[in-house]
Amino acid sequence: MLNLPKHAFLIGIFALLCAPAFAIPGPSVSYGANPVWSVGGYISDLKVDATVTPAIGVTGQDTIITSIVISAATGTTGSCFVTGVLSIEDSNSTLAMFGISLSTGSDRLVNESAFVAPLGSGIRVGEGESLNLSIDWTSYSHASYCGSSYGAQSLYTISGYYAAP
Picture: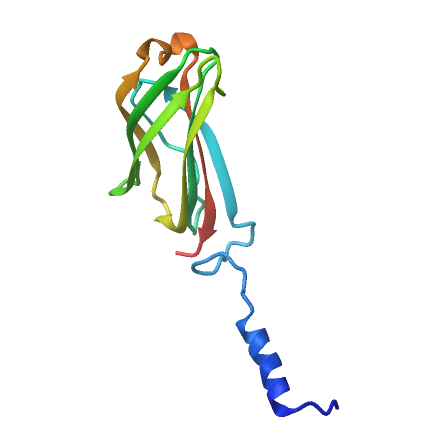
């Protein structure tokens, strides 16, 4: 056995105990699969209020949403700027609401912008609950380029993990 002073041993143990641990926050995952998920898709043309219901739940697990991205894209070079309200709801209540602004580019800019919400503690959607993402657009700038004839659309990506209820 090494002949180390007692304080060196205690410092070493303290360093091990204080090292950061890396794990998904929340209850244990018990269904025997990778708990991390991500899903994305089309919401609507810009200027068109819409609701989508992504399929995110699994039997026996709650769903935790940790990240939301809403983006705008267009197939043209005309610019469009829209503002609106993003609502995240389950079948019982509103879980979150965000004011968002999106724009498509002009001749000088990239034709995409995004609303990004990293949700450190997450939004819990209970087992058996459906999730709805709704966008209500409230104002438009350069509205002629915001329509479907220009390919202006809103898209989403959400991600998170599954956790025991």
